Amino acid sequence: MTTTTKYIFVTGGVTSSLGKGIIAASLAKLLQAQGYRVTIQKLDPYINVDPGTLNPYEHGECYVTEDGAETDLDLGHYERFLNVPTSQANNVTTGRIYQSVIDKERRGEFLGKTVQVVPHITDEIKERVQILGNSGDYDIVITEIGGTVGDIESLPYIEAVRQLRWDLGDNNGIVIHLTLVPYLSAAGELKTKPTQHSVKTLMESGVQADILVCRTEHDLPSDLRRKLALFCNVREEAVIQSIDASTIYDVPNLMLEEGLDKVVLQKLNLKSSKPDIARWNQFLKRHKNPISEINIGLVGKYVELQDSYKSILEAFIHAGAENEVKVNIESIHSEYLNSDNVKLKLSHLDGILVAPGFGERGIEGKIDAVKYVRENNVPFFGICLGMQMAVIEFARNVLGIQDADSTEMNPETKNPVIDLMEDQKSITDKGGTMRLGAWDCDLKMGSIVRDIYKAESIKERHRHRYEFNGTYKSQMEAAGMVASGLNPDTGLVEIIELPTHPWFVGVQYHPEYKSTVANPHPLFVAFVKAAFNYKKKHRGVSMAQNK
Ligand code: GLN
Image (cartoon, rainbow, N blue to C red; front, side, top):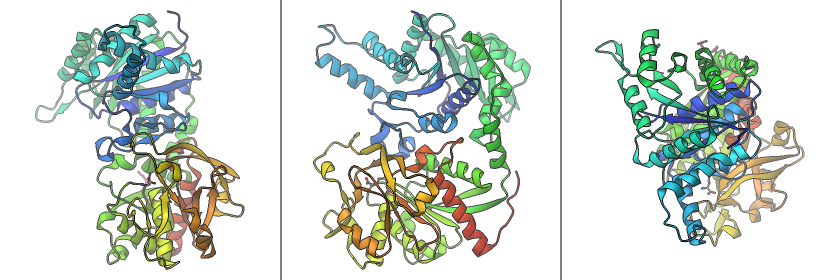
């Protein structure tokens, strides 16, 4: 087989949560900074067709791409690091693989053959891996295999990697294996045995790791690197340490110091040069040396798990660096918020973001939070469900429509200010049936958002079923809530704002998905700035502690 695209497979051993996604994104960043066109793909071994139907407590947030794919949150890291959009092809699950093979079987495409894991499932995996490479858009495709080597469900993926390496030939496909080197404090020692076993497990499937990336809390001394190299059958310079970092944005520099990009390029027979990461480092410098700090309340119902709002938290890091302020996020559980305690829980904050979400739980607390910030001129940012709550609050407390509600929470309401779109009403399937992906939005002349975006028209990513009910638009506008962003084709309201409030913006879409290190999202940048202004006005400015 001749190939122009090179493939890097990233596998993980010993345990989950070692940060494969961040290592893949950091390596991709270093390769991109040497002029290579790189993309990253995630293969997930679970049977859900996509993570769209998963509760955020299971796998963290569901990330949405421009083309409307509901994907693993690691794709968010890829986009934030690389500033290149991903697509449906960048995330494949076992469910999707099987669905596709079974569909082919039903169409009779296997010509009477017995359909089996090997070769049919493995062939489908191989095909999916090569879709991005065959597009001609990339020099290097990094494929991250989810899960841990040795898991039953990972086996077909590892077999596909083995075959692909054989098909692609020498220097065209390499395997990076991420493992853990634990520190036993009682013995005062770093232990290599789990790594040795993990490499051995991989070899039982016929795959020899080319490079080891060892997650560790302490520096790996050279004798230990030599030992790992000898017992795991890799070259010494291919033993890379991945030491715990204070921020994920440090990892590209740590990998550069370890020479991961160099060994990778050498093994792929590609030229290496000094990566140009000056812009990245400018961001890091601002991120680590803020001139002040602000406190933002994140009102949501999945606050126990940080990963549920991953892209929002990262967007605040980008926007904070842009404003040179440290953004401290205080998670506020909307279920425990009510009109009696809202002042106590929110009055020390410089801005409030009401988060996206689904279902009834905790929504009255969100409405109380919106009322508080609207009446007290605290900067407010509502995202998706957060925007819908702002509309309900305004209808109830300003227009006096007591029973204003969303039909998601109260299907019987006489005043559905938030309602299902007509074409959603007949849909019963839950997976992949929302309004998804990038939609156009025209910004109203003279609006806050037009000034922030500095554009007449934008494109933002959606993931929801319910909408602002247009029949209430003129009533709302007459009372001061402006629909400042509209979809040009459907007239759907995408943005609401209160021009008389210092900063009150609600968006039906998810701006957080598009924020990257290179392009912090303008709405987050403006919200952080407004919160900083609020703090200066009401509390004076304290200098942040430089780290
Ligand atoms: N549950 C709401 C809807 O489906 C909002 C979704 C969201 O916040 N992503 O419209």
